[in-house]
Length: 258
Image (cartoon, rainbow, N blue to C red; front, top):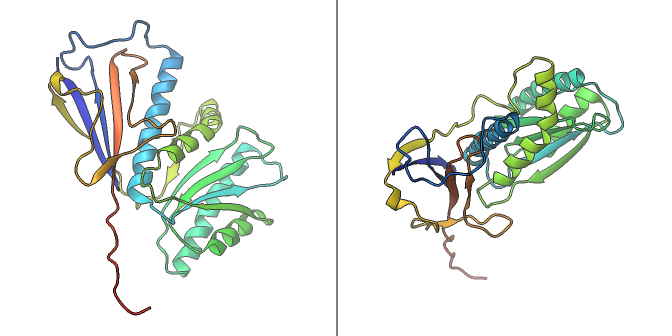
């Protein structure tokens, strides 16, 4: 009764997912009692896949001191098409301004429209002068209000990826209703796209408590758990995943006079 092991290396993070699948022999594998190809189940699968792809992009391309940016509108009412257009205009201006400053632009962008009276544009940007961001947004809408937060040094941006996908849910629905089949987020073309590696592993290697390899530590989520598991919403088969994060090497102590 083998299972499939998927490994993704993205930045400082090695992500491992073990799952039983009907594509290979799964006799005796644990399976949820209630499962089926319902619209709700498919939506959960699509959401998880979107989170995975965004998580890999963020982990592979952004690190400590890079920026989570929120572009605000304030009280200015906007329709959905205008927000899309503003996002495109902002990227055009920002590309031009970063090029002038000698900075190579890297970005991921998602639009939040669950409250059309107060929409936001969420972005992750590489480290740059905050004034460039504010001035670029000001050139698009006039009175610019920008929130900027530095990314932390944990290496695993899973929570941020989940937040982006959650906040863009209403936007994806609007695209679907408008017959526009767009992704939940946009990204620059110069990003690294990690590729999963799959292998078939004997069932005896399935362990409930994963262990980190040398030089890495298991990442703990908000609940203090080092792994998470469940059953696939459609196939019903069991899965488990965990993250290993590279342990920072201590910086050498410089000797000298104080």
